[in-house]
Each structure stands twice: as structure tokens, then as C-alpha cells.
Image (tube, rainbow, N blue to C red; front, top):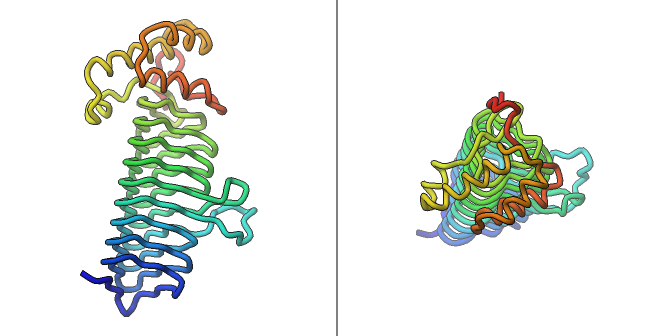
Length: 267
């Protein structure tokens, strides 16, 4: 199937479209946009640039992807959005390009799902197979690891990190880094344990999950402070996932979301 552009679509002359791309009526593809093979741009979607997309991305009606950063310091400098393959941008979701002060580039990997009204702000870096539920929102300069899930109406503060395989429950407000493999919930975010179901679905063995669970109990529920807990983890049972957890905490600049005091769930 050859590339199909509806006569009521608007495609800037500088845009580069791969093979078998479909552009629906009233869609807009702006200047300096590169779309890979088999991308689909549905009616009324807006894809702006400078931006580069891999193959088989799908832009649903009324999404806005690649638009200017929402930053008052931005004054039209050339900044970019880079996106991998097979991402779905659902209705009314938004993704902004980077800013000069943040490195000039927003990036997303492959196989991500952005549900309706979700938002990725300027200078964010999103990995692969991340799910943004409806109205899940990243402020600027947020890093999200592979296989994470951002629940409905979640908000992640600028410059925070969300670790791999983390699950943020609906309405969570994260103002610190979210631990990898964690289940984190609440308007005053609290880590309530391990994302066991998510890990099992992703192929972690029972022994791997049990080892991580023990590590989490040492980090979050022992009477040790963070430094002492990390030392106990280094001296104890080690797996690649536990090593990842240790490194994440050690390199955190904002501090990490921990368990609520007294075992109270976040809220």
C-alpha cells in the first residue's frame, strides 16, 4: 500500500514521510517532521516538529505531538522530539519538544501507550513499553524507565525519575524519585511494596520476586536508616535487580519515595 494523504490534510513541504504512511482528513503534519514507515495519522491529529518518529506509530484524533515546550524561557530555539516505533498516542494526549536549558531534546522509546489526555513535558526521557493511563502527567525533565506504568491522573514532579517496572496507582503525586519495581500510591506518595503482579507478568521468577521483596523490606520497613539499609543490601543476597535498586537509591538526587510512616498507605 502506497502512502495515502487525504486531500483535506495539511502536510508541510519539508515533512518526510516513509512508505505506507496514512494521513487522515484535517490532520496536520508540520515542518521538519520525519515519519517512519507505516505510521498512521488520524483525522484532526497534529504532529509538529522538528521531530523524528520511527515506524508504525499511530496518532489518534486530536492528539498533539511534537509541539513547542510549555516553558516561559522558550523563544523559538530549534529543539527536538525523538520517538521510536509502535507507539500509540491516544485522543488529546500531548508531547512537547525539549528546551535548550534541558538539553534540547525530548525522547520516547518504542511500544509505549499514551492514553487520552496524558502528557509528556519538555526534556523528558521515556523508555520502552511504558503505559500512561488517562491524564497521567509528567512535568519537565522527568526520566521514566522501561515497563513503568503511570496511573490515571498521576503527576510526577519535574526532575524526578521513575524506575523500571514501577507502578504508580491512580491520582499519585510523586515529588521524589519512584523506586524501580515498586508499587507507589497516594496524593502524598508512599511506596506500599513491590509491584509483584507486574513483575510476574513480565516474566520474573518466583525466586526473583521473593528476593526483591526481602530487599524492599530491608530498605523500607527495617529500623535501619537509608545508608545502613544500603550497606545491608550490599552485604546480603545479590541479584541484578537488587543491584539496580541499590544503584537507583545511591544516585538519586531528589531522594526516593519511601513507605508512609506507621505503615499508613499514601493518601
